[in-house]
Amino acid sequence: MLLLEFACLQVLDGLTTLLFLGKGVAEGNPLVRAALGASHAGLALPLVLIKLAGVLVAYYAYRSGRTKMLRRINVWFALCVAWNLAAIVATSV
Image (cartoon, rainbow, N blue to C red):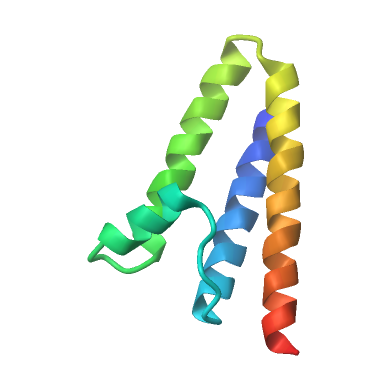
């Protein structure tokens, strides 16, 4: 269940990131910002690759019994999604 939650949060984070980038809000994560800036394939491909890499790391954490860490990361990504939604709402007002 933890891994599924993580994957769903990655999808939500990716979608909300694309939405706020489309509204002109800058990406706050320096790693993601660099990947987006270095890509010639648009915004979606580097974001999908970063999210897939995150899922692979989460899978490793889950398989190695680091469920407490995975729970904490899920909370962090839920907060990221909430932040992204707040940025989208703020630019829509």
